[in-house]
Each structure stands twice: as C-alpha cells, then as structure tokens.
Length: 422
Ligand code: ASP
Ligand code: MG
Image 1 (tube, protein in one colour):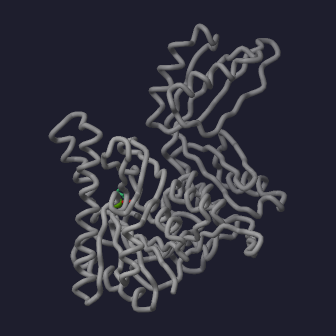
Image 2 (cartoon, rainbow, N blue to C red; image 1 turned 180 degrees about the vertical axis):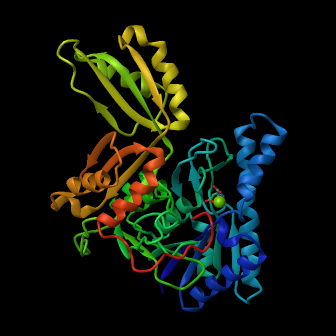
Image 3 (cartoon, rainbow, N blue to C red; image 1 turned 90 degrees about the vertical axis):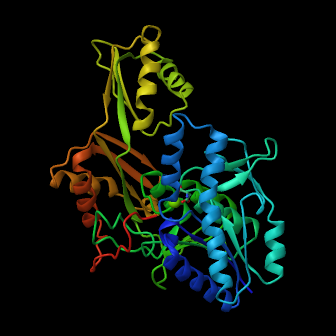
C-alpha cells in the first residue's frame, strides 16, 4: 500500500462544486488502495478577503491575531472537504495544523517548520480514514500560539507531511498541467516538462516561476521528497520533480529545463565608490543590516584616472526604499558619490543542468536577445543558470525569443484552466 500526500490549492476548492469534485478525486485515490493525506488551502480568495477585513478594522493588525484569523480560512475548507468525502461513503477526518503536529518557530506570518509530529494522522490512517490537514498553519511550543507559514504556505505543509509520514509521492494539484518551460500565460507555446530535478526547479522558482513555492521545493530537496505537480482539472500526468541519487541518477539532462522571468526586482547603483579594499564589505554590511535579500551584484572596473568604481545590485522592489535610506545615512563614511534607483527592470533566467556540460549557451542567449533588439544591462551566472537584466517593458518579448531560440516551443498551445496559476 502506498501513502500519497495530495495538496489542493485555493482555486481547486473555490466553491461547493469544486470541493465535491476534489472529494471524488481523493476517494478515487483511496479506492485504488492507497493511504491518502490531503493538505488543503483556503477556498478561492478567502485569505485575501480576510486580510482586507483585518486592515479594515485595524491599521496595523496584531500579528498574533492575524494568524488566528488567516488560519481560519483553511479550517473552513478542510472541514467542508472532509464532509464531502464522508457523504461519498468514506471515512475522513480533518485536522488543524497544530492537531497535525506541525511545529514551527514563533514568527507570525512567516513561521518556519521546525518539527512535524503526525501522531494523530498516523492513528487516523491506521483506522482507515482519509486524513485532511489545514495547510499553511502551525503551532509554536513556547508561545503556544497558532502561526502561519507565509503566503502560499500550503505547498510547504504538503511537502513537510510527505517527509514526516515517509510518503511515496507528494502530489501538488494546480490549475495548469504541470511545470512548463515558461509561463504559458506569456508563452502560449510553452512545453510541459515531464521530469525536472529539484535543483533546476529551485532555480526556476527562485527566479520568478510561480507554479511552486520556493520554500516547498527547498524542503522537498532537503528531505528527499518526490513531487508530482499536476492539474486538478484532468487526469493527465504532470511534472515529476525528483532528487537524482546514485540509485536513480538524472536520466537525461536536457540542456535547458526552462526560462523564468521576474518583474519584482529593482536595481540600486552606488556611483563613485573608492576602489580600495573594504568598500564592498562596508556597503554590503549596511545592506545586510536592513535584512534585504540581494540577488545580482555587478562591480565595474574602475577608471584609472579617478580610482572610482560603480557597484550595482538588484533586490526586491519592496525593500528598495529601506536600503536607499540606510546607504544614504552612511554616505560620508563610505565615501561614494551618489545613488541611483531603477525599478523598471526585468530579469530573465535560463535554467538547465545540461549547461554544465554544454558550451555556447551564453552566446546563444545573448545572440537571441541581440536579434530582437533587446539590450542587456546586467549578467550573472551559476553552474546551471544564466540571468540577464533588461528593461521591464521588453521582458515578455525577451522570454518569447529566448524560448524559441533554445527550441523549447511546443507544437500546440498550452491549456490554462484558471487565471492565477495557484
Ligand atoms: N491560503 C494561503 C494563501 O492564500 C496559503 C496557500 O494558499 O497556500 O496564501
Ligand atoms: Mg491561496
């Protein structure tokens, strides 16, 4: 008997009809002779609606109460789903995050899972029940309070349950057929990927692919959980995200797994930095103190006549003002001339494990962009990724030409079942 963890997102359980449809699907998996544990998100836009309500009653809602409120969204869907399964004649039992043993640190709104003790889930499974767990929530042992894992946290709940229960597979149900070589909403000819390594998936998620949350992929990679990302609207095989091992090596490594884009970053340029040891350390110590997440960093060679250089870096737009203020406050000590802020940038990342053994990938990428008249402003690489920064308004064109240049276009257009990808 296999143990299968299934995660259904908000768009898969948006109303009573959808809940009944999902219930049938879960029952089919049970009837096929598997033990089934389900992690479920809040219905449709419930989480956003609850957030709006909170802000309507308080300018800065208390974090503890915010988690009490938001965790209610998943309690609604888990109970409804359990009822729907019961009415199909199968035993189902729903559990909150704390009942499921989802132990987290104490950070409200962004808690990290520190331990999973699914004792009650195991008991329910042994009694033959289908187990439904509220996604996105946990419990802290010190504060004894309810926590939430951050937006999209139900993916992480599912993966953590799969790891703790030693599941055979963790199925993530969504409204597209799997992971695509590019966002099918922008590139209609994006191809579905059959198998991808967790390492490649991590790079795609970190560079703007929205189909899976990065923390869930990280967790799966660290704990050796195999994911199957698939549509809840049909029975098609989706995408397997796996961890190559000695017993199951990466079978074939296509040169390019996919292309991701990201419009959420801005660029800060520190102009006229004295080119002497310690300056980069000084600047990035100031940046680090703000807690901002730096992505790319580029330093120019200094002009011999001035001994000054420029350092540019990218970071989430939401952290831009904070970092500018912090740098400005220490301009004199650091000795730079000026700061420039640019929030009209777009980032494109080409990802593929096969890059390790293939030369000429950069040349091909840059040529494709040149042919389309797109200017490259920054470049950074890792072993399995090449990223470029361009103007924000050219990023979708860039994505399409690069996708075509690397032969990723499919013969047919991809089907997108709902609007959001979640
Ligand atoms: N309901 C939460 C959210 O909308 C968690 C999730 O959907 O995974 O962010
Ligand atoms: Mg949601």
